[in-house]
Image (cartoon, rainbow, N blue to C red; front, top):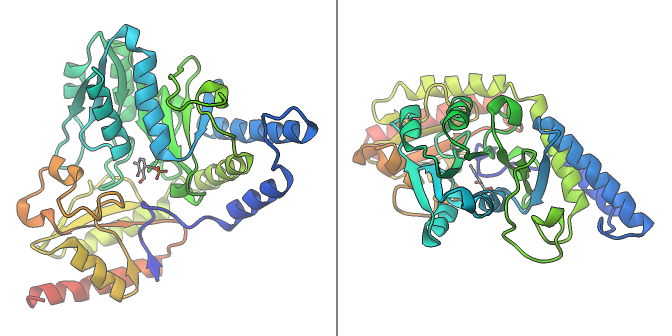
Length: 376
Ligand SMILES: Cc1ncc(COP(=O)(O)O)c(C=O)c1O
Protein backbone atom coordinates (compact mmCIF):
# COMPACT_ATOMS: atom_id res chain seq x y z
CA UNK A 1 0.00 0.00 0.00
CA UNK A 2 1.12 3.52 -0.77
CA UNK A 3 0.44 5.69 2.26
CA UNK A 4 -0.53 9.29 1.50
CA UNK A 5 -2.32 10.10 4.76
CA UNK A 6 0.62 11.50 6.69
CA UNK A 7 -1.26 14.55 7.90
CA UNK A 8 -3.52 12.21 9.84
CA UNK A 9 -0.59 10.39 11.30
CA UNK A 10 2.79 9.03 10.30
CA UNK A 11 4.57 5.73 10.74
CA UNK A 12 6.94 6.01 13.70
CA UNK A 13 10.58 6.10 12.72
CA UNK A 14 12.51 3.00 13.77
CA UNK A 15 15.15 5.09 15.49
CA UNK A 16 12.42 6.83 17.50
CA UNK A 17 11.05 3.47 18.60
CA UNK A 18 14.55 2.29 19.48
CA UNK A 19 15.23 5.30 21.67
CA UNK A 20 11.80 4.90 23.27
CA UNK A 21 12.52 1.26 24.13
CA UNK A 22 16.05 1.99 25.33
CA UNK A 23 14.81 4.81 27.58
CA UNK A 24 12.02 2.59 28.92
CA UNK A 25 14.45 -0.18 29.81
CA UNK A 26 16.96 2.01 31.58
CA UNK A 27 15.15 5.18 32.66
CA UNK A 28 11.83 3.81 33.82
CA UNK A 29 11.99 5.48 37.23
CA UNK A 30 9.69 8.34 38.07
CA UNK A 31 11.62 11.57 37.42
CA UNK A 32 9.96 13.09 40.48
CA UNK A 33 11.46 10.43 42.78
CA UNK A 34 14.30 11.40 45.07
CA UNK A 35 16.34 8.20 44.68
CA UNK A 36 19.24 7.79 42.32
CA UNK A 37 17.18 6.21 39.51
CA UNK A 38 14.67 9.03 39.75
CA UNK A 39 17.45 11.59 39.54
CA UNK A 40 18.93 9.88 36.48
CA UNK A 41 15.51 9.86 34.80
CA UNK A 42 15.06 13.51 35.71
CA UNK A 43 18.43 14.41 34.20
CA UNK A 44 17.49 12.66 30.94
CA UNK A 45 14.14 14.43 30.92
CA UNK A 46 15.93 17.76 31.35
CA UNK A 47 18.31 16.99 28.48
CA UNK A 48 15.45 15.94 26.19
CA UNK A 49 13.57 19.12 26.96
CA UNK A 50 16.68 21.22 26.35
CA UNK A 51 17.04 19.60 22.92
CA UNK A 52 13.41 20.35 22.08
CA UNK A 53 13.68 23.93 23.28
CA UNK A 54 16.79 24.44 21.19
CA UNK A 55 15.14 22.99 18.08
CA UNK A 56 12.28 25.44 18.39
CA UNK A 57 14.48 28.44 19.31
CA UNK A 58 13.07 28.84 22.77
CA UNK A 59 16.05 28.12 24.97
CA UNK A 60 15.09 30.63 27.63
CA UNK A 61 11.50 29.39 27.73
CA UNK A 62 9.67 26.29 28.82
CA UNK A 63 8.08 23.18 27.38
CA UNK A 64 5.09 21.40 28.87
CA UNK A 65 4.78 17.78 27.77
CA UNK A 66 1.24 16.71 26.97
CA UNK A 67 -0.72 13.76 25.59
CA UNK A 68 -0.61 15.32 22.13
CA UNK A 69 -1.55 18.34 20.07
CA UNK A 70 -5.12 18.34 21.33
CA UNK A 71 -4.17 18.69 24.97
CA UNK A 72 -1.47 21.25 24.20
CA UNK A 73 -4.00 23.35 22.26
CA UNK A 74 -6.55 23.04 25.07
CA UNK A 75 -3.93 24.16 27.57
CA UNK A 76 -2.96 27.09 25.37
CA UNK A 77 -6.52 28.34 24.88
CA UNK A 78 -8.14 27.62 28.22
CA UNK A 79 -5.02 28.02 30.35
CA UNK A 80 -3.74 31.26 28.82
CA UNK A 81 -7.19 32.91 28.67
CA UNK A 82 -7.78 32.09 32.32
CA UNK A 83 -4.34 33.27 33.40
CA UNK A 84 -4.63 36.67 31.68
CA UNK A 85 -8.29 37.32 32.49
CA UNK A 86 -7.48 40.28 34.70
CA UNK A 87 -6.22 42.10 31.57
CA UNK A 88 -9.33 41.49 29.48
CA UNK A 89 -11.64 38.85 28.12
CA UNK A 90 -11.24 39.06 24.35
CA UNK A 91 -9.72 36.25 22.29
CA UNK A 92 -9.09 36.04 18.55
CA UNK A 93 -8.72 32.89 16.48
CA UNK A 94 -9.66 31.77 12.96
CA UNK A 95 -12.58 29.90 11.46
CA UNK A 96 -10.33 27.12 10.17
CA UNK A 97 -8.51 26.00 13.32
CA UNK A 98 -8.36 22.39 14.43
CA UNK A 99 -11.33 21.36 16.62
CA UNK A 100 -9.01 21.25 19.65
CA UNK A 101 -8.77 25.05 19.34
CA UNK A 102 -12.32 25.76 18.13
CA UNK A 103 -14.04 23.66 20.77
CA UNK A 104 -11.84 25.13 23.51
CA UNK A 105 -12.88 28.60 22.26
CA UNK A 106 -16.53 27.59 22.45
CA UNK A 107 -15.87 26.60 26.05
CA UNK A 108 -14.33 30.04 26.64
CA UNK A 109 -17.48 31.70 25.28
CA UNK A 110 -19.61 29.59 27.62
CA UNK A 111 -17.67 30.94 30.59
CA UNK A 112 -17.93 34.57 29.56
CA UNK A 113 -15.04 35.28 27.18
CA UNK A 114 -15.66 36.99 23.86
CA UNK A 115 -14.11 35.22 20.88
CA UNK A 116 -13.70 36.56 17.34
CA UNK A 117 -13.19 33.99 14.58
CA UNK A 118 -11.28 35.50 11.63
CA UNK A 119 -12.73 34.66 8.23
CA UNK A 120 -10.55 33.27 5.44
CA UNK A 121 -10.52 33.70 1.67
CA UNK A 122 -10.93 30.94 -0.92
CA UNK A 123 -7.33 29.89 -0.29
CA UNK A 124 -7.82 29.66 3.47
CA UNK A 125 -5.83 32.81 4.18
CA UNK A 126 -6.81 35.24 6.93
CA UNK A 127 -6.69 38.97 6.27
CA UNK A 128 -4.13 41.02 8.17
CA UNK A 129 -6.49 44.00 7.87
CA UNK A 130 -9.26 42.06 9.59
CA UNK A 131 -6.88 41.02 12.36
CA UNK A 132 -5.87 44.67 12.80
CA UNK A 133 -9.52 45.72 13.07
CA UNK A 134 -10.33 43.01 15.60
CA UNK A 135 -7.37 43.60 17.94
CA UNK A 136 -8.44 45.53 21.05
CA UNK A 137 -6.93 46.76 24.27
CA UNK A 138 -8.60 43.89 26.10
CA UNK A 139 -7.46 41.19 23.65
CA UNK A 140 -5.52 38.74 25.80
CA UNK A 141 -4.91 35.86 23.40
CA UNK A 142 -4.60 35.36 19.64
CA UNK A 143 -4.32 31.83 18.28
CA UNK A 144 -3.65 31.34 14.56
CA UNK A 145 -2.54 28.00 13.16
CA UNK A 146 0.64 27.96 11.10
CA UNK A 147 -0.42 25.35 8.52
CA UNK A 148 -3.99 24.23 8.04
CA UNK A 149 -4.37 20.47 8.33
CA UNK A 150 -7.07 20.14 5.65
CA UNK A 151 -5.86 22.30 2.78
CA UNK A 152 -2.32 23.27 3.80
CA UNK A 153 -2.66 27.06 3.86
CA UNK A 154 0.34 28.76 5.49
CA UNK A 155 -0.70 31.78 7.53
CA UNK A 156 1.56 34.86 7.66
CA UNK A 157 2.49 34.25 11.30
CA UNK A 158 5.43 36.68 11.43
CA UNK A 159 3.32 39.51 10.01
CA UNK A 160 0.52 38.73 12.47
CA UNK A 161 3.04 38.73 15.33
CA UNK A 162 4.35 42.18 14.42
CA UNK A 163 0.83 43.57 14.33
CA UNK A 164 -0.21 41.90 17.57
CA UNK A 165 2.88 43.19 19.41
CA UNK A 166 2.30 46.70 18.03
CA UNK A 167 -1.39 46.93 18.82
CA UNK A 168 -2.00 44.86 21.94
CA UNK A 169 -0.59 42.98 24.91
CA UNK A 170 -2.07 39.70 23.72
CA UNK A 171 -0.23 36.40 23.99
CA UNK A 172 0.26 34.96 20.48
CA UNK A 173 -0.13 31.19 20.16
CA UNK A 174 0.16 29.07 17.04
CA UNK A 175 -0.81 25.47 16.40
CA UNK A 176 2.28 24.27 14.53
CA UNK A 177 1.28 20.60 14.52
CA UNK A 178 1.28 20.45 10.72
CA UNK A 179 4.23 22.75 10.11
CA UNK A 180 6.92 21.53 12.47
CA UNK A 181 9.52 19.60 10.47
CA UNK A 182 8.04 20.69 7.13
CA UNK A 183 8.70 24.43 7.42
CA UNK A 184 11.06 26.30 9.73
CA UNK A 185 9.30 26.74 13.08
CA UNK A 186 11.10 29.07 15.44
CA UNK A 187 9.61 30.87 18.43
CA UNK A 188 11.96 33.79 17.71
CA UNK A 189 11.65 34.09 13.93
CA UNK A 190 7.90 33.65 13.92
CA UNK A 191 7.50 36.10 16.81
CA UNK A 192 5.35 33.70 18.84
CA UNK A 193 4.74 33.34 22.58
CA UNK A 194 3.41 29.77 22.52
CA UNK A 195 3.64 26.88 20.06
CA UNK A 196 1.86 23.51 19.91
CA UNK A 197 3.49 20.45 18.36
CA UNK A 198 2.50 16.80 18.15
CA UNK A 199 4.97 13.92 17.81
CA UNK A 200 2.89 11.54 15.69
CA UNK A 201 2.75 13.98 12.77
CA UNK A 202 6.54 13.76 12.44
CA UNK A 203 7.25 10.04 12.77
CA UNK A 204 7.13 10.15 16.55
CA UNK A 205 4.73 8.45 18.92
CA UNK A 206 1.02 8.94 19.21
CA UNK A 207 -0.27 10.53 22.38
CA UNK A 208 2.79 12.67 22.76
CA UNK A 209 2.94 16.40 22.23
CA UNK A 210 4.04 19.65 23.76
CA UNK A 211 3.19 23.25 24.41
CA UNK A 212 6.23 25.48 24.14
CA UNK A 213 6.00 28.68 26.13
CA UNK A 214 8.14 31.75 25.90
CA UNK A 215 9.70 32.91 29.14
CA UNK A 216 7.14 34.61 31.39
CA UNK A 217 4.12 33.17 29.58
CA UNK A 218 2.38 31.07 32.21
CA UNK A 219 -1.02 29.52 31.60
CA UNK A 220 -3.25 28.27 34.37
CA UNK A 221 -3.34 24.51 34.68
CA UNK A 222 -6.35 22.75 33.16
CA UNK A 223 -5.81 19.41 34.90
CA UNK A 224 -5.15 18.84 38.57
CA UNK A 225 -3.06 16.40 40.51
CA UNK A 226 0.50 16.13 41.72
CA UNK A 227 1.68 19.38 40.12
CA UNK A 228 4.24 17.93 37.72
CA UNK A 229 5.55 20.06 34.84
CA UNK A 230 5.79 23.13 37.09
CA UNK A 231 2.17 22.66 38.05
CA UNK A 232 1.04 22.98 34.43
CA UNK A 233 0.40 19.33 33.66
CA UNK A 234 -0.14 16.91 36.48
CA UNK A 235 0.56 13.22 35.97
CA UNK A 236 3.75 11.16 36.03
CA UNK A 237 5.99 12.45 33.26
CA UNK A 238 7.01 9.82 30.72
CA UNK A 239 10.75 10.25 30.23
CA UNK A 240 10.79 7.73 27.34
CA UNK A 241 8.11 9.77 25.55
CA UNK A 242 10.18 12.91 26.03
CA UNK A 243 13.28 11.16 24.65
CA UNK A 244 11.30 9.85 21.66
CA UNK A 245 9.75 13.22 20.99
CA UNK A 246 13.10 15.03 21.08
CA UNK A 247 14.40 12.43 18.63
CA UNK A 248 11.41 12.83 16.28
CA UNK A 249 11.77 16.61 16.37
CA UNK A 250 15.48 16.42 15.63
CA UNK A 251 15.04 13.98 12.74
CA UNK A 252 12.21 15.95 11.17
CA UNK A 253 14.05 19.26 11.19
CA UNK A 254 16.89 17.73 9.19
CA UNK A 255 14.52 17.61 6.18
CA UNK A 256 12.59 20.79 6.82
CA UNK A 257 13.39 22.27 3.42
CA UNK A 258 10.87 19.66 2.13
CA UNK A 259 12.29 19.95 -1.40
CA UNK A 260 11.00 16.51 -2.47
CA UNK A 261 7.55 17.23 -1.17
CA UNK A 262 7.43 20.50 -3.11
CA UNK A 263 8.44 18.76 -6.30
CA UNK A 264 5.89 15.96 -5.82
CA UNK A 265 3.14 18.40 -4.97
CA UNK A 266 3.85 20.38 -8.12
CA UNK A 267 3.66 17.18 -10.16
CA UNK A 268 0.26 16.42 -8.66
CA UNK A 269 -0.97 19.97 -9.22
CA UNK A 270 0.05 19.75 -12.87
CA UNK A 271 -1.72 16.40 -13.23
CA UNK A 272 -4.92 17.65 -11.54
CA UNK A 273 -4.95 20.85 -13.60
CA UNK A 274 -5.69 18.76 -16.70
CA UNK A 275 -9.21 18.02 -15.50
CA UNK A 276 -12.12 20.46 -15.46
CA UNK A 277 -13.93 18.31 -12.91
CA UNK A 278 -11.21 18.83 -10.32
CA UNK A 279 -10.77 21.90 -8.12
CA UNK A 280 -7.45 22.38 -6.40
CA UNK A 281 -8.24 23.68 -2.93
CA UNK A 282 -4.72 24.06 -1.58
CA UNK A 283 -3.03 27.39 -2.30
CA UNK A 284 -0.20 27.21 -4.81
CA UNK A 285 2.23 28.33 -2.13
CA UNK A 286 0.75 26.11 0.55
CA UNK A 287 2.49 23.62 2.80
CA UNK A 288 4.74 21.31 0.79
CA UNK A 289 3.26 18.07 2.12
CA UNK A 290 -0.48 18.69 1.75
CA UNK A 291 -2.59 18.76 -1.38
CA UNK A 292 -6.33 18.97 -1.17
CA UNK A 293 -8.47 18.66 -4.27
CA UNK A 294 -12.14 18.16 -4.92
CA UNK A 295 -14.04 16.20 -7.57
CA UNK A 296 -17.19 17.74 -9.04
CA UNK A 297 -20.42 15.95 -8.07
CA UNK A 298 -18.54 12.96 -6.65
CA UNK A 299 -18.39 11.90 -3.05
CA UNK A 300 -14.89 12.03 -1.54
CA UNK A 301 -15.49 8.61 -0.03
CA UNK A 302 -15.95 7.12 -3.49
CA UNK A 303 -12.55 8.47 -4.49
CA UNK A 304 -10.94 7.23 -1.27
CA UNK A 305 -12.33 3.74 -1.91
CA UNK A 306 -11.26 3.75 -5.56
CA UNK A 307 -7.71 4.73 -4.68
CA UNK A 308 -7.64 2.17 -1.89
CA UNK A 309 -8.70 -0.57 -4.32
CA UNK A 310 -5.72 0.49 -6.40
CA UNK A 311 -3.29 0.32 -3.50
CA UNK A 312 -3.24 3.99 -2.44
CA UNK A 313 -4.31 5.34 0.93
CA UNK A 314 -5.63 8.91 0.94
CA UNK A 315 -8.24 10.60 3.10
CA UNK A 316 -11.27 12.80 2.66
CA UNK A 317 -10.53 16.11 4.40
CA UNK A 318 -9.06 15.55 7.87
CA UNK A 319 -9.09 12.43 10.03
CA UNK A 320 -11.30 14.25 12.54
CA UNK A 321 -13.95 15.22 10.02
CA UNK A 322 -13.64 12.35 7.55
CA UNK A 323 -16.41 10.35 9.22
CA UNK A 324 -18.68 13.41 9.27
CA UNK A 325 -21.08 13.42 6.33
CA UNK A 326 -21.36 17.22 6.13
CA UNK A 327 -18.74 19.40 4.45
CA UNK A 328 -16.27 20.31 7.18
CA UNK A 329 -15.82 23.75 8.73
CA UNK A 330 -12.76 24.48 6.59
CA UNK A 331 -14.57 23.66 3.34
CA UNK A 332 -17.45 25.91 4.44
CA UNK A 333 -15.07 28.70 5.45
CA UNK A 334 -13.32 28.79 2.06
CA UNK A 335 -16.72 29.04 0.36
CA UNK A 336 -16.32 26.11 -2.00
CA UNK A 337 -19.09 25.79 -4.63
CA UNK A 338 -21.80 23.28 -3.71
CA UNK A 339 -21.00 20.92 -6.59
CA UNK A 340 -17.50 20.42 -5.18
CA UNK A 341 -18.30 20.35 -1.46
CA UNK A 342 -18.66 16.61 -1.06
CA UNK A 343 -15.82 15.52 -3.27
CA UNK A 344 -12.87 16.66 -1.18
CA UNK A 345 -9.82 14.44 -0.76
CA UNK A 346 -6.45 15.13 0.85
CA UNK A 347 -3.12 13.69 -0.20
CA UNK A 348 -0.37 14.19 2.36
CA UNK A 349 3.25 13.13 2.08
CA UNK A 350 5.68 11.81 4.63
CA UNK A 351 9.20 10.48 4.78
CA UNK A 352 8.19 6.99 3.69
CA UNK A 353 7.01 8.18 0.25
CA UNK A 354 8.91 8.14 -3.04
CA UNK A 355 8.62 9.84 -6.42
CA UNK A 356 7.51 6.55 -8.00
CA UNK A 357 4.51 6.57 -5.71
CA UNK A 358 3.55 9.98 -7.06
CA UNK A 359 3.68 8.57 -10.58
CA UNK A 360 1.44 5.71 -9.45
CA UNK A 361 -1.03 8.19 -7.93
CA UNK A 362 -1.19 10.11 -11.21
CA UNK A 363 -1.85 6.86 -13.09
CA UNK A 364 -4.71 5.90 -10.77
CA UNK A 365 -6.10 9.45 -10.91
CA UNK A 366 -6.20 9.21 -14.70
CA UNK A 367 -8.17 5.96 -14.61
CA UNK A 368 -10.53 7.41 -11.97
CA UNK A 369 -11.20 10.48 -14.11
CA UNK A 370 -11.85 8.31 -17.15
CA UNK A 371 -14.40 6.41 -15.10
CA UNK A 372 -16.05 9.64 -13.94
CA UNK A 373 -16.16 11.03 -17.45
CA UNK A 374 -17.86 7.83 -18.63
CA UNK A 375 -20.45 8.43 -15.87
CA UNK A 376 -18.89 5.83 -13.51
C1 LIG B 1 -3.46 21.18 13.03
C2 LIG B 1 -3.67 20.14 14.08
N1 LIG B 1 -3.75 20.52 15.37
C3 LIG B 1 -3.91 19.64 16.36
C4 LIG B 1 -4.04 18.29 16.10
C5 LIG B 1 -4.24 17.33 17.23
O1 LIG B 1 -3.08 16.62 17.50
P1 LIG B 1 -3.14 15.21 18.28
O2 LIG B 1 -3.66 14.20 17.32
O3 LIG B 1 -1.72 14.97 18.69
O4 LIG B 1 -4.02 15.41 19.44
C6 LIG B 1 -3.99 17.85 14.77
C7 LIG B 1 -4.16 16.41 14.46
O5 LIG B 1 -4.89 16.04 13.57
C8 LIG B 1 -3.79 18.79 13.73
O6 LIG B 1 -3.71 18.42 12.46
